Image (cartoon, rainbow, N blue to C red; front, side, top):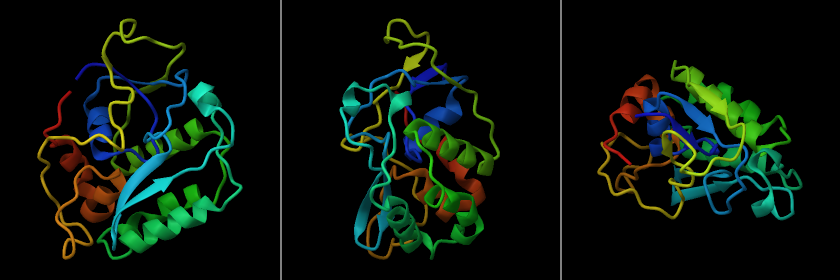
Length: 208
């Protein structure tokens, strides 16, 4: 894959990470206007009752008219404790949760002002655990699709969009209750597959 222009995501879905791992260079769009109902501040995990949607609350205002680099996280409610409780409830029985939990817990105790900084810090933590170095830069201006040399993947991965590709399966915590659920956040793969996460993500049959 060539260079990609893409948004920052909260944790990031499996297909999102597949694109990151395949790209020769990654340009994170910080000049785009914030897009509601997207993975920019949402993530999907699998719990005892099925799909669980995590959402980072944002400070009130017309974020759809704000540049992504200016969008601020709201701490009026203790969403960090709620998200961490959900993650531990979903994955404490998984094979690798205890191995990785200390790397992620700070994201649910320490506060960052900007959503973009939070997402990028999360991304770099995951990359470190995968033992990869992502060729990331931030956009220096707003690019139209015609301006950017490479693939414009902004808003390609959305919570409401179904990826048609058949995914290879892996053991999930609640596979005794549900059939395999594909394309969850990367944490689902990491906690269940551990060191083989990079190989799994790279093997996905997804293509633009």
